[in-house]
Length: 316
Image 1 (spheres, rainbow, N blue to C red):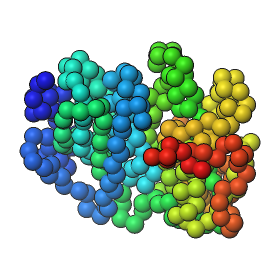
Image 2 (image 1 turned 180 degrees about the vertical axis):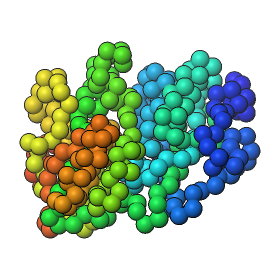
Image 3 (image 1 turned 120 degrees about the vertical axis):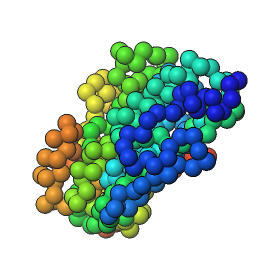
């Protein structure tokens, strides 16, 4: 197996995207120059093969996905993505696999304006840890804790497609080029621009990773409120009901997870402006319910109340 430093130099050293990187890959630490008047937003996600993604997935998709799920947390805060560090554990240093993995990771870095500024490569079962750093103007970050009774609940994009992709993979489908469901699952798109556009309009926000019901419950608990969902208003991708059936599509949208859309609360007066801003990004914003005084998430069929939770595997 090639040495750690050889692997890093070959596959993960790239020129920084801007002058904020004073010192990048190659030293004991990176040195960064944050923008004046901004707060630093930091998040970390660990992706483990056969837990968070199929280990047999294309290496390009694994690299993309490992970064995307962390960037989605920055999107939920309304932050601009700036820098990341990555730890990669793998059992075999296959050069072709690493090249494709790095290509997927760096392609999303480039698309998102992120500089990879450090990391670590070691031997073991396939797992990836990515820490992302973003910036948000002081005092303007979106949080989970700002929803108020009477406000609307809304989501960007569509829900359920990623779960259809997981089911497709489990059924043996492998062609990402001809299967949009696999793409939704393996190549999620973090809503960074949408999160920034919603600053000053959304009162609370969270990204949908564990499933709509589970993540809405997280938002409600943080805000000390409840929610009334209208399941008939959920935005489903075209063809989802034909593929999964009506009930299967509903369950996928409510608790399938991995959609990485943004769930927000906002006041009636801000709906039109929020929709206009997102339309400029090619995104829809769909109203799916209201914030209530009664705690808990109401309006959800009992069979659709589970979402992903580590260790137990689901949320009751």
